Image (tube, rainbow, N blue to C red; front, side, top):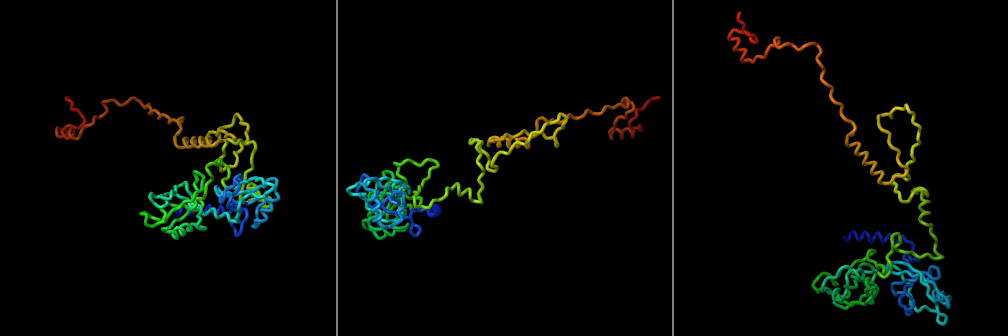
Length: 374
């Protein structure tokens, strides 16, 4: 099971690496992470929100003074911010009004890679009476997102931190998905609590255990993208996927027909129904078709899957079962004897058994002849 989850994690990570990044340094996207928000009127979450664009342009400079100057230039109006949120890994655009007397937003920022949000441990199970159970960790709903004791990176980062704090108090930032709150949990790792592990809980790490979308937001409908990407005016435009497919020499796209109904299905082996053969006038003296087979009915120009199935079923019945219309001819009557009357009984010699013939020979009579007295 662990091997399967590891393979899925590597596959999803490869997909994420192929997606276009907002701003990268050594292949990792960066942005201004919000560390503190003093203005409660701005709906920005500290730690979870990253500012990756401003006024329709991608932030490609790490100097915070340029960001502050752009905000001051919007004094008396609104500044447009593109925010990337770690919950669900989605982007959104937010218009924030900038006051004239003090043209600041009241937030504290830090230039940080977006990959720090991948260092999350999902609590999958909690063993009773373990240090995790005593600290109040909840299975499935809790995510360990960090610690005030220092930075934790990689899958083994939390385990190394726990080993350093054995039999000591360890503080962890825990986010609960069901209640959408982040709390500070204090626990004491120990090897002597009576079970396996120092925490007594099962943790999941990787792409399958990242922070999900908050339950208060609507669920994406069928056909909607799960991971959104923002577009900026200074970002290189990519051609749409349909244009890339049409330019590829290895793919064939059948031409779309406006007259073809959308509620009819055509098998994948043919791109369009076969055209009906040309009709020819039949002469009244024309004989049956060659081979003695009945002429096949013309197929409809548009056939559904049910029509194909019924046609195949009919063919199978005709091949497996004999036709009921063909009956065997009655046997001919026996030939009549016309050579004359049947032989009389006197001319016929009766059959004599071997025993009777022997008795007649001993009596001096010929077998098969009666004695006549003269």
